[in-house]
Length: 384
Image (cartoon, rainbow, N blue to C red; front, side, top):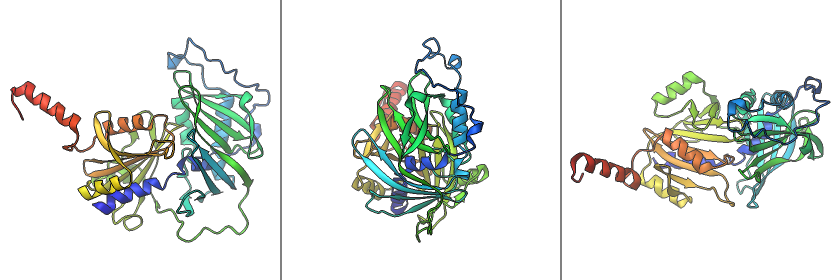
């Protein structure tokens, strides 16, 4: 199964611009619907009596909700082209050219990639904020959203209004800058527990409208052409793919697509996109198992076999030079590949997913076999 497993890893690695593409799906309605003219901004103070009880926390700021609701409609109405830059504290930066075509999809070209090939993503699959606005409801389910006028800034030469997402402990987890004129998301920052920026993605330049004489380059069409509804996901499960409805940690399914056999592999590959409103996780499923040739190929590509929680998996990334984390493991009759570049603790996120979708036991999983041995001794007093 060498070609199948390696392909799943390679495909996942091709989504390094996932966070950037999240910029493509926030949007615009007339500013008059917001009613924020007199808003002076959040003070930055947290109610200490409320942070220990999520139900008692200060409600979402209605202005922030209105601004995000306004933005969630942009992908269906606003065409634009621009250059977005992703950066991390380790000094890693990635520049991506983005052209967004409402109702059709998003064309991206990662300028820093050695491949430098344009990719076209269908409408509805452009990143952490899907076109139907569902991630906005997830954001409100998992975070408190507040308007913070003191953070308002100019991004890509355009005035932008700031909104923050606060977690259940009262800690800011993310900040968003929305274009004052259109509502488009111009910049997104993810924060660590100490409030420091752990990743930033934002437009360096932006032009509204479709570029003249735009041509989608040959070969750039996205292979994930088949959108999977619940029934199709159920069928995929009977064909050897796990295809969960959700993942631990409040990660809800935004969209599922399948690349048919022959598009990126000799077998169909399912790509599911999950989010909690801030972090985004991709999960790739392909029927089969990991052979020794597959694992040799993973090692050659820089993967290490690591213990995450109670389970082992093949892991690459999570460093300043390679912030995107990719995790590969065999689960029942599938090979699963998890990819995330914006979870606060990607390995902890992966550990939770592994616990929910446990790997097939392997003799190298010393923790598992140690537990089996201890249980056997307790039952029989002998050796297994």
